[in-house]
Amino acid sequence: MAAISDLLQAAQRAVPRESSPTRAAANCILGIFILWWLFSTVKQYLRLRHFRGPPLAAFSKLWHLKTVWGPKAHLDFYDVVKKYGNLARVGPNDLIMEDPELVKRVLGARSTYRRADWYDAVRFHPNKNNVLSMRDEDEHAKLRAKMAAGYNGKHVQDFEKKLDNNLSNFFRLLGRYVDAGQPFDFARKVQYFTLDVITDLAFGDPMGFMAEDGDMYDYIETTEKAMPSFITLTVFPWVVTRILSNPLFRSVLPSDKDIIGMGKVMGIAKKYAAERFGPDKKVQRDMLGSFIAHGMTQEEAESEILLQVFAGSDTSATTIRATILHVITNPRVLNRLLAEIDAAAPHTAQPVIADAEARALPYLQAVIKEGLRIFQPAASFAAKEAPPEGDVWKGTFIPGGTRIGWSVWAVLRREETWGKDSAEFRPERWIMEADGGSCTSAEKLREMEGVWELVFSYGRHQCLGKPVAVMELNKVFFEVRSLFSRWAQGCV
Image (cartoon, rainbow, N blue to C red; front, top):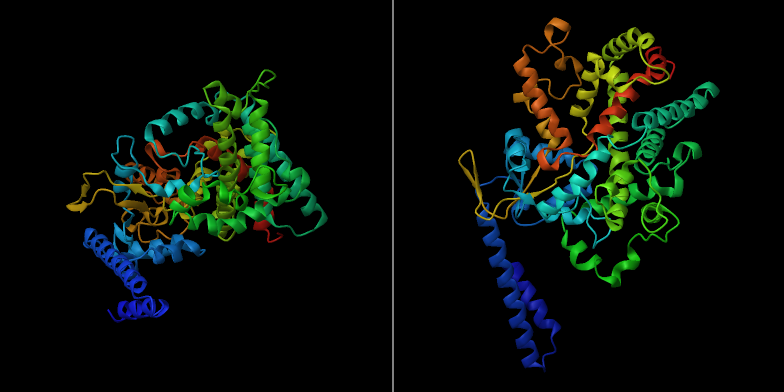
């Protein structure tokens, strides 16, 4: 109360003494504002008072803001659910879950939960939706239907061959450095590869990062620098819908006229989309061609190309980097993986293993699954909104309109599912004991796989790019054996 009194006195001093009517009006307005703020804060606190969490989070979004601004948000959210349990409070109107059954209930195809305003912040243009940001469930389903065939490769000519060609280019690029005995940034080269793969599959041409052997248009650097600001908008999504959507603020946003960064890629997306429409339209059997054949408009195509480049490349690159790091720092895993690959190599397609062949290698598949489990490619809050009538989970009432996000990091480290060594990278957990693994039953394996699939989200929210990503990982982790062999010998 002392702080409120000080605030009133400061406001009074700011008003000229000879202007008593003005001072009285100012005091009245300030008093009304403070009373409104107090009433709103207390009311919001009481709605979710039966949920525990960091004390500040119950009254302010500052805790959530501080968390997502930092580089370890996934660990901070994990610590919260470890301390306070499932459905911990992380904001005045925000809860976070880590129970996989609740996650499936919220994300399921028949769920009454809807996308919260969190998704408004993941638009590339303040006034244009993409398949990730769209909150209208019916429109979202229609848009996904237009894109499904393109992502699963059914209507894309030479889908697997394009991936193979880019993978061959990737190892030629790395080979130049290895042969010359020069050090190189493997993490950055991986992103060149994933960017070229997704653009080649999407609109028929790799963007050229590997050929350039550089960060074209400073795209990677500028997006990495912008990421903290981008994530911050998910805490305050009204900034996108009410402020950045105003033409007065257009100059602070990326533009398709830019020569570098996201704006340059927006221009490329606009160009490729425009080529597929009009009297002289180009018809190609790539992902974009499939989208359009299934009814996608030119404006939708521009947004989806951007999403493919932004999300499709970074997530795959993250998985490749993290999994390789875990493999090469674990000699037991590295040697067992190499043994399986070396035994299979003489009998596989050349120069790149076929996807079907890679799927038949049990330890390779275990490594990929464990890599995705131990370090997920995306760990966003991704809030959904409880139905107006509210919901009840295991006897606990969740008021209508409450935003509920989830910690995929926590879900995939639950000891109830993964055991006491849930934080360890151990591919053997995916292999039956009879085959040299540690899984004790088929039932346990099914349970783990049912939780693991949440890596790609779930139900109507499941990642459309899953088929591309899985094929990419199958091939990369087999063909990288030449580098694995050098790592095993301590030469790289």
